[in-house]
Image (cartoon, rainbow, N blue to C red):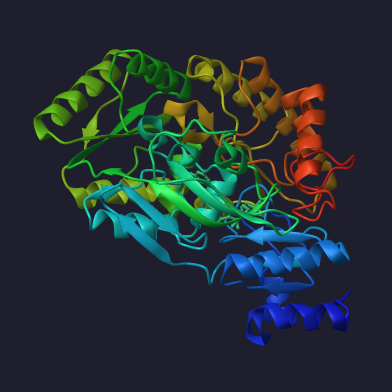
Length: 466
Ligand SMILES: Cc1cc2nc3c(=O)[nH]c(=O)nc-3n(C[C@H](O)[C@H](O)[C@H](O)COP(=O)(O)OP(=O)(O)OC[C@H]3O[C@@H](n4cnc5c(N)ncnc54)[C@H](O)[C@@H]3O)c2cc1C
């Protein structure tokens, strides 16, 4: 149902007619993210300032209109899907890098800046913004902060929250405030910037972000190491991580995943192997990096690696990392849909969890390729399926629940980096426990008394959303 003429007139008076979209085509374009979830908003609003966001939120509160903040829509949990209609608040026009402050090693950006664009820009100053979700050429920094995005380099460098120095936030009720600053240390009150980071756009709308930057490492090597099976590869990961070495990345692909990637973007992956690890090591001294790469290679050989291929050129290495980033789209071609899990377990539990995922795949008769950030213990078992088949979807639900429960039993959790959104909210009570869940729900209600921001997401609402 369309908004009333009063609401449309008020929205127009805030952002002007050009930045308010209501045509059917526009509403469809803002109705989905990278999951199978889909639901159109009643209007799309494209703000250009925190003040405009504040006015839109005040209006949404007055009329009790649901509102879904939206970065680039690359989310894998349905977070930006306007499930209850209302307003899609898109940050594509707030996409300026406002400042690169080399003295304080920070960048100040608007939420719509694309992750890769920021990385390239800071590199011109010899600086480094490490968080690198595989979607980095699509995702926006605001979405990264809201999801606390990770990526391959997070093994050595940490996730998005490790880089958030300050945020400008508009509360659901419309107040604008700053939390944090350019300084390194803050022990002044609650650490609200961390609370908003990873809150999936349920506590406030982020309108400006100050990000910590590091010096850009001068040298980087890449090594591709095939193994006979996934378990052996996972055992090698724990051996490396307890050896005193710290690669920037250790990524895992099973043989199913490798085959899909090769069909989609051939780069010569070792298709005869049961699994492969892809390593990156970086630093400022070439000899040190080469010696460390050889040390990693030796541990892999001792752990049963079939061979060790160290990349010979930056171009060759980049192709391998492009192939890694192509995993998700290449799997998406195989079946009409995929349910992407994002479990996170202590690294020592990796061999056990991959064994259990293999068993679950057989028992439920569903293909479940496994890949992910093995160094972090963060895996993405993807259940390939067809949503139009209700019997198959019952099996998907069963398999997804079993994988998640296995992760929890092994000391892990439901999501490492993709967030909960709509896709996994029904498992939240098991993930957090009833008491903590109730506390988190109360906290959200305190921030958002009228329940307008991303309603129906993150916490269970009694019925499943898929
Ligand atoms: C091929 C592919 C690979 C991926 N690889 C990774 C990976 O390696 N690591 C990883 O962590 N993720 C990965 N993702 C998931 C996704 O890209 C990340 O979650 C990313 O952070 C989402 O950014 P976005 O701008 O697209 O956000 P959106 O999808 O638009 O939104 C995500 C959430 O953030 C909220 N939000 C957006 N902007 C704001 C704002 N300004 N204020 C408040 N809330 C806001 C939305 O409401 C929603 O809840 C991948 C996705 C794809 C499609």
